[in-house]
Amino acid sequence: MKILRFLLFPFAIIYDIITAIRNFLFEKNILKSVKFSLPVIVVGNLSVGGTGKTPQVEYLVSILQEKFKVAILSRGYGRKTKGYILANNNHSASDIGDEPLQYYKKFANLNVAVNENRVEGIQQLIQSKSPDIILLDDAYQHRKVKGSCYVLLTKYNDLFIDDFLLPTGNLRENRAGAARADVIVVTKCPSNLSILEQDKIKKKLQLFNKPVFFSTIAYADKISGSLNLTIDALKSKHLLLVTGIANPKPLLSFLSDNAINFTHLNYPDHHHFTDKNIQDITSKFSEINSKDKLILTTEKDYTRLQNKITELSYLEIRTAFLNNDASNFNSLILNSIGVNLYNLNN
Image (cartoon, rainbow, N blue to C red; front, side):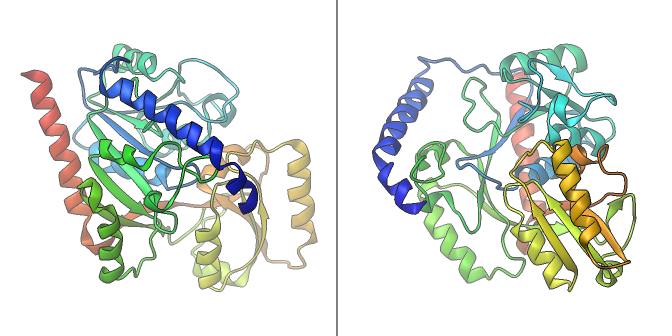
């Protein structure tokens, strides 16, 4: 695979030129970006793959919804529909995508919409729901919308600064795109990441002169779904773990570190589980030679599996900032919103 990626290097150069020209045209206003009459916070990354966008968006909702009427707009990756849809109780992951459905079910009074056309989606959200703030999920490269604040995520063990463009590497655009960010969050860090290691990463990123924060994935102390059990209670059971996410390794490490016995069935990110997949899962579960067993999945996969497997539980995750930096990050976001609200009203 590495050899193939190396051989595709000329295509990466062509891709770099194309994306650079596109960004240049937007920077010079030859291609137009639309700015809206309310703050729009953009969350995204420079690379493909799981960088923790979903828990980061949920974190932003949690700090904003007490003071503001918040809405989320996503393109609804993996859905089988097109156009603008405002989430309601009748929608499934096939209708709006697994991440938007997760947002909708997790937060009361949160408006969640999907539209591949972000400009049109924002316009319809404003007209129908009059939010104070809109969060754009996975829209860092969507230059047709001019965001108020850009939160750029990069994974600890796969920093964008060490990567290269597709198809040789995993970057969607040149590393120079980080200049658009207002803040960089290094995600999925070890919870005990040393200050020395953090300083090394900051030194790598100092070229962009942006505030840098470090976050980790924190797991809930119990599972939810058909069973509500503590993590300690799982140690006496054998789990069939079913995942369809970009990077299940942190979850596997968490279960192993807690001495939990499990068998893992791994599917691609945003996988649509077919009847055959459900049969395979059921068959694998029956093969586990234990009277005390259960099927566990991720919160995101639960949105796609809950109506297909009756006895199913999931483990919630959340973003946690290292160095007690949550208050500093919160202040940066809230200050950005305050400045933007002032500028929009004056």
